[in-house]
Amino acid sequence: MRRFWRQQVFLLLPLLAVSLAAKESFGRTPQENKPKPAATPRDNREQTKPEDGKTIGADDDPAYLIGAQDVLDISVWKEPEISKEVPVRPDGKISLPLIRDIQAAGLTPMQLQRTVAEKLQKYVTDPQVTVIVKEINSRRVYILGEVTRSGSFSLLPNMTVLQALSGAGGFTAYANVKGIYVSRVEDGKPVKYPFNYKDVISGQAAGQNILLKPGDTIIVP
Image 1 (cartoon, rainbow, N blue to C red):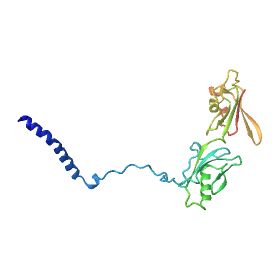
Image 2 (image 1 turned 45 degrees about the horizontal axis):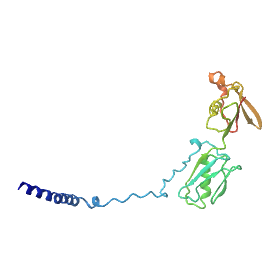
Image 3 (image 1 turned 90 degrees about the vertical axis):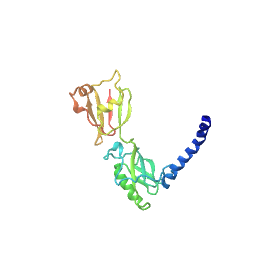
Image 4 (image 1 turned 180 degrees about the vertical axis):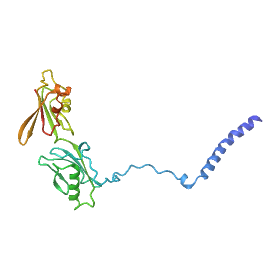
């Protein structure tokens, strides 16, 4: 007899589970029973509209002046045919669809952004333009002589002679660290600025650690 009732319980368990599941489903609201839609990739055209006047300049420096050989990323919101990455030609100009040649060298990224937007108004309603300096090639300094790595280096904002030398990997065993100088052209004439490495790092000649300018050449004899 006990075995008989045990078999009956086993037979009733599946029916009880189905009944509880149905009761739970009927108790939900239609919104809860509705299946969730599958996730879809975000439309690339649904971009966040850039704020007016928001421009990214080189190293986030709003005073940076674009120069020849720099590479710029010109982005026009919702206009992929116009947006493109362009180099600044030796004549200081860039070429863009619709507006063709436009002067870029000598302008800040913000100024160029406004200029491009003004010229695009003939073709695009309320153009939103962003200018990003992707590569800084116009601002270079040069280190020559008895250093581990000589050559050209990107001129970072407020870079000093000591900072530039640190990027050259140090001096060779034959370097005359007391006779280093910076060669610069001012008003069309070459000018030398002495740099005594030992005196500078000891604090005796801190004034020799000058800020570098584009085109400066550091000579390590």
